[in-house]
Image (cartoon, rainbow, N blue to C red; front, side, top):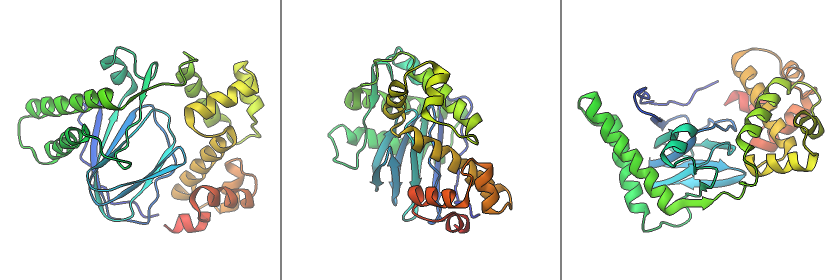
Amino acid sequence: MHHISHEYIQNNPQLPFKLFSFHAHNLARVIPLHWHQSTEILYCESGELQVTVKNQSYLLKKNDFIVINPYEIHTSKSPIENHILCIQLPFSFLSYVTSNSFYNQFTFSANSTKQKQDSDAELIKNMSQTLTLRETFQSKGIVKNLMILTNVTRIIRLLVQFYAQDNVNSYSNNRISFITKTLSYLEKSYTSDLTLNDIAQHFSYSTYYTSRLINENLGVSFSNLLRIIRINKSIELIRSTSLPLEKIAVKTGFKTYRNLYNSFYKIYDMSPIQFKNK
C-alpha cells in the first residue's frame, strides 16, 4: 500500500490546536471516510484538493478553504499536486473561546469554493501567513507560537463573524454525548448483526428519534454509518495484514466478500482489490 508523501510540519504541543501542512505527491491515494471531534480548516495554498463532506463534493483550488464541523463525515483526495494547510481546533478550545456557544448555538458554514465573500481576503491572508510562519519563520519558539496563536485566533474571529450559522440540531443538549457513545458502541459491536433498533434500545430512545439524531449530526443514515465503520476496519486489515479478502469480510461483519465488494463500490467506486493496489 503506497502512502501519500506528506511533508508533515509537526504539531507543537504548546499550542492549543493542531497545525500541519502537507504536499501530496501520490495522486492515487484516497483518505478513507472519517470524522473527528475537532473542527478542521483546510486551506489550499496551491494545486487542488477534492473534499467530500456529508456526501457533497468540493474542489479546493488555490486560495480556497473549507471548514468541517465536528463529526461531519468527510474524505479527501488530491487530483493534482498541492500544498495544503490543516488546522484542527479541539472542541474544548472552540467552546472556551466562544463561551460554550459553538455547537450549542452555532456551527460553521464556511466554503470559499462557492463564491468568495469580501471577508475572505482577510481570512485567506491569515491562513497563508500561518502556513508561512509554520514552515519558514526562523525565530525563538515563544515568539513564533504567539504569532501563530494570534493568526489562528483572528481566523476563528472572522469565521464566527461571517460564517456562523444557527445550529438547527440544538433541540438536544446531549447530542455530543449521544454521538460519542453511539460511535463508541458501533466501534465495539460492528462485527455483529447490528440494527438501528439495537442502538435505540441501548439508549432507550425510539428508533425514529435515534435515526434522526444520527442523520442530523453525522449526515448519514445508520446503515451507511455502520458500513463506513466496517469498511474502515477492513481497510486497516488490508493495510496491516496479508489476510485474504474473504476472511477480512467475515472479520469485519460483512460476512461475505460480495457484501464487502458492494460496499467498497458504493463508497469508493472501486473494488477492494483496486483499493488495495492503490
